[in-house]
Image (cartoon, rainbow, N blue to C red):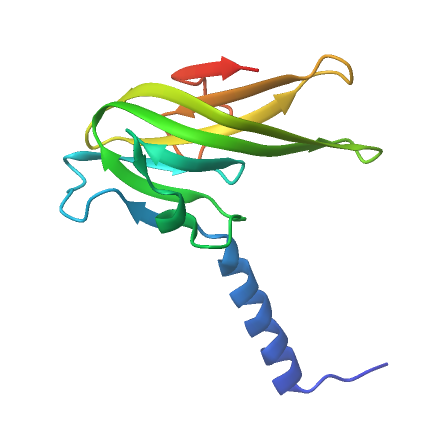
Length: 154
């Protein structure tokens, strides 16, 4: 039997703890002067890659030069009717095969209410030959299974 020293076990726990923090949401804002009461907090899940908000480019500011991310991005955006330009990079697998979905240059329009929190998610559901790809806006960012406030099928 191998005996591990306390330092090795402690170092391993630190590495695991730091690694688990890598997928926490990253916070962004459209305007630094925007207060939570004036804006809406929207969490975009990793499959959704936002390029514009109301025609304003946010891609480089939100994602940097590396055009990818593995964790949700939470953004405070102005309340009211908002047009979000985005791409979808999603996947689906069943342990036998994997399908990657790339849907470019999409736009959605939604009236976000001030002071509320939302989540925008992409789902793939259905049988092998009848997959439904759905984008939904939910009122509660961290709860799945809720009925979307608005959804679109592809």
